[in-house]
Image (cartoon, rainbow, N blue to C red; front, top):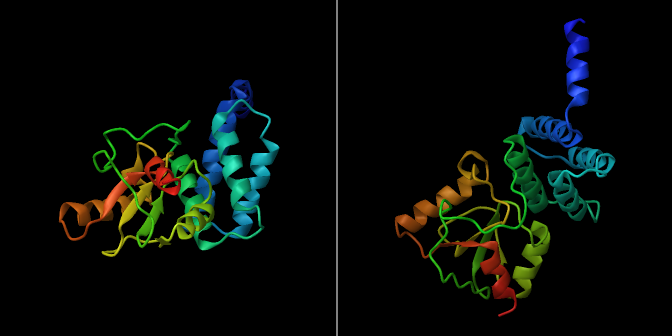
Length: 206
């Protein structure tokens, strides 16, 4: 049997979920090649996820939910573009987190209790959140009197880490925001705090 036929037989005997994950990692790498997630690329990703949604692969199901929320109104705004970019970076690294697990001690969260107040505070969201899209989180924050920006500055009060930030966060693009916030915090240049998504959610009902 020649090499090409041998490879074909091997690839098609691998578990479906594994093949789908490999395909999705490749798709994510292609989309991220130029560093920007465009509207057509987001729609292409959604089409692929819909075709492959009948699966026992939890990664695909979770990402499909996220992409459908982002494209619900048919427009990919700057916040949603960043959110989708972060999620695909995690996929490209092959380390997307499953389930809504609390970040462990390996993450640079402030010590508990982490009390978040929205009114008059400036927020930056990073990583993939269980709550919803960046647009939904921005809207919820603004309704509580807060302000949301894309980048960490000396004015930032809270950097909120999404529940699906991966163990490889330092090597992903959104890790730059976390590292910048850590520097400001450690240098005591500001009163910036690094908190978990759950801390922010509690503030919404306070």
